[in-house]
Structure formats: structure tokens, C-alpha cells
Amino acid sequence: MKHKTFFLFSVVLVMTLLGAALAPQTVYARSGGGNGTLTASGDGLAGIRGNGTVTVSGNGILWIKDHAGDASIQVSGSGVRRELPNGWIRYTGFQGQAVVSGSAVTVALSGYSIELQASGSGKFVLRGNGTYSVEKDGEIVVSGVWTEEAQVLNIP
Amino acid sequence: MRRLIPTLFLLLTLTACARLKRRASPPAPTVPSPQAAAERTPTPAIVASTETPSQPPASTAPVPTPDFASMTFAEKNELFLQLLAERQAAGMDTSAAEEAYTRSMEASFSGDASQADRYLEEAILLLWNP
Image 1 (tube, rainbow over the protein chains, first blue to last red):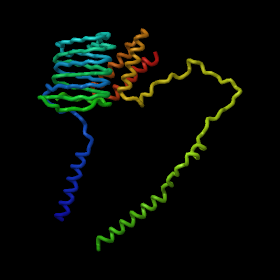
Image 2 (cartoon, helix red, strand yellow):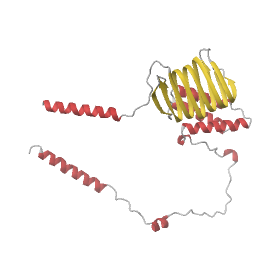
Image 3 (cartoon, each protein chain N blue to C red):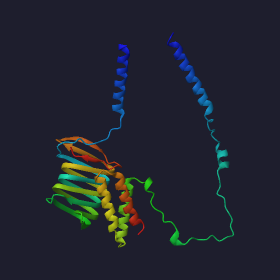
Image 4 (cartoon, rainbow over the protein chains, first blue to last red):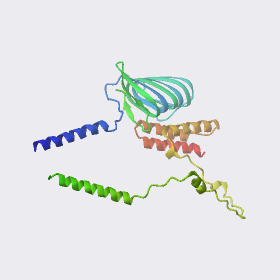
């Protein structure tokens, strides 16, 4: 009886461990205090919302939103600028670079040859084809690829 | 001995099941020779007609739309940007499509990919049928 119980317990334990090891892993960034640095490059949509400094370059449509009213926005290159009623600043036909800093900003670039670097804390979304990594305290803590889904990740 | 009988019974049952399954499954397809395959290759039938085909009026002809189901997000995104550039170069008002595209971007930020895709497709169609 004792042996049977031990055998059953072992089987359950092995199955649980196997299940945990083989289950599909979702690449979600670990939530933390922020102040990591996100680096991403690819084609599709790259966007970030939070506190810090964002540098983004590429071709397509650029959106910037200053939620707190304290942002510093520097845009170079070409594109048709338009301020939308809901607070967005949109550059259509954008080709260049934008550097945006603030306590609550959203920056998104949709198009191709996108290069994005962001330091601070917040959330980001990367859809399409590309790669990204997040560095914190001198080491890469998260890395992955842009996905078809709209996965919203946190800068750890 | 007590364990041997059930084991043998199980083994026999499994063997019988396997045989029945094999019998029930259709025979494996034979690989035709290239000559036989060539003989079977259908040739398009040419239908002779003395009637003049009636041409539907141009306005009722269905306008083909992009096959969104077979496209990835990056492909749809690229198509939108290409159409936008073309329409803007032609002097068309693209503001409605750009609004839909902004909603798509906002939905992506909310993590709602299906809603984002719907807005993106709407934006494309607004440019597709000007």
C-alpha cells in the first residue's frame, strides 16, 4: 500500500514537472521598478508609453502624445505634421528621427526600418517582424521578437 | 500467474483492434506512373458558342478586395502605407483612413489585436475604394 502511494505520487510529480517544462512560454517582461532600456528594430508597429526618454527613427507614420504636458519633443526629418483633437501629434509620410522626453508620453511609429530606444519605465508594444531586448543594470534581462499579436509588455 | 492472464487478454484485444482497424482503413494509394499521370491530366475544354457574351455593366462588377485573412499584420500595415502614399500623391482626402489607422494603433496599445486589425482593414478599405 505504501509503495503504491509512493509510486502514484512519483507519477503525478513527474507529470507536473514535464507539463511545466513543455508548456508554451509567453515572453512577458518581468514587472519591476522600471528604468530599463528597451532597444528594438524591425518593421510594423513599435510603440511605448511611460516615463523617460524615447528615441525613434524610421519611415511611416509617427504619433506622439504628451499626457502630462511636460514633454520635450524634437523631431527631425520629413513628414506632414498634424495635431489631432484627442491630443495626438501625427506625422504622416514620416522619415527621420524623434526624441521625446517626459513624465507621461506615448510615442509610436508604424512603418519600416524602425529603430527604437527607450530609457525609463512604462509599457511597450511591438507588432510585426523584428527583435528587441531590454537592458537593466548592465545586463540584458529580456529579449524577444516582434509578434503578430499585440502583446503589451513592461519595461522591467 | 494472476497478472499474466489479464496481460495476455489485453494484448490479444489490442492485436484484434489493430487488425480490424487495418482492414477498415482504405488501401494505400498506388503511385501512378508518369505516363498514366500524363494521360489523366485534364485539358481545358473549349466551348464553342455562337452567342455574343453579354457584358455586365462596369458599375455592377464586384470590386476585388484584399484577402486580409491571408495577410500578416506587417503586410497589411505595408499595404496601408503604400495606399496612403499613393492617394495623398493623387491629392485625395485621406483623413478618414488616417483616423481609422490611429484607432488601430490605440487598440494595439490596449493589447486588442483583433480590434486593431479591424480598424486597420477599415483604413485600407477606405483607401482601396476611393
